[in-house]
Image (cartoon, helix red, strand yellow):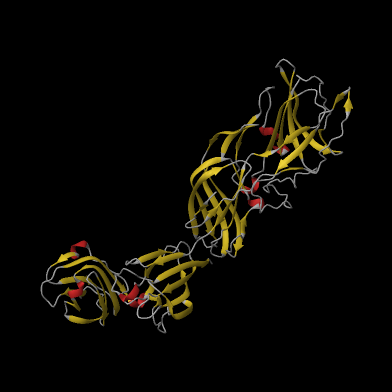
Length: 522
């Protein structure tokens, strides 16, 4: 099966071949005579779960899936046997009697013998564990046993049920009857995928909504599968988040009814209440372990010419990395860590190559900011502008603001800024422009955040005369909100807003880029 993702979390379903192994009770049985006929006894085999790479046969509590190695002479199972009288009239010979391995022979506690007549065939139906005998009433001889079952809510109460069917066995049989058990459930386990996941303590993983009830018929499988239930494994588990690390298996294996799943949701909950979720689809088959390898992959941001955003899925520590665009020199690199709250949005400004005045960061720098789009003018302020482009107006505190816009006609324009009432001019610097893009810095030296000020206004004009200017998109941000910067020459404060900051100069060719990685969840 292919890889899938969980909030970009990779999900791998690995299937290995099934291997049928005989249990420790001897395959070759001794034959015991009784009334010149052979005693009924059995050879028993239990196939391994497909993809049992992380199952532990040393665990014996309820939910550890039974394998060939753990289904030994110490185990027992129940048996139903219906005998054909020779003309299609059946009687129940054995009704849910326990079969054990005694003196290297699998047999019932009471002795039963073959009739010695070939057409007096017997149908055998075996099931494990013996504790479910009350679920399988058999009142109609000759009919195939079936039972209704609902998966228990608590994972530690979910048992590994196995059945075996051998029908129309001739009545003159002289060898042990072969019973090959099959697991009737799909087993669901979780581990860390190849992309890793944030370290921390996982308090639970849930999966739902899935069908939880159905009817099982010996020899043919499940029918009437219904219900919609979310199952949760609630067990504190501290992980490092490295690839291949086990999260929940063994005793905490979910035993699910085989079914087709459509947009079933997996939810990982950390101890701080933060969650990662992903909807998955596929088919669960009986006797197969579906190991979901969970990853939260780093997020990469390439140059797009627009502000990009990232919303933290969980409260945790994130690694931020930025690469500046190549200009007269190669772009620089900065990295550091930052604590973000679940739902918090940060803003990524990726620089364009050659400082070409592209929409964002025309100077080629790439940075990440805590606050991004302070003000985006409504459409009424955008579009074709004859004469001068007045606006946008916005109120804010002292600081340097970056304005980025796309449109047309900028190559012939000049840029000024002021507060109209009361009148106050602001200096515009670092203007980078082409016909279609511009970036400019406005140095706001007075606090114009109150309603007594008309607000900051940027004027785009061609020497104060008429010129057709088209404004299609505008973004404004405050430079002091930058927490990490990657440029051609990294300044001393290029990592001032992050912990564990490091910087390098002149290492990146082409456009800038950024990367955000979840490291840990407290």
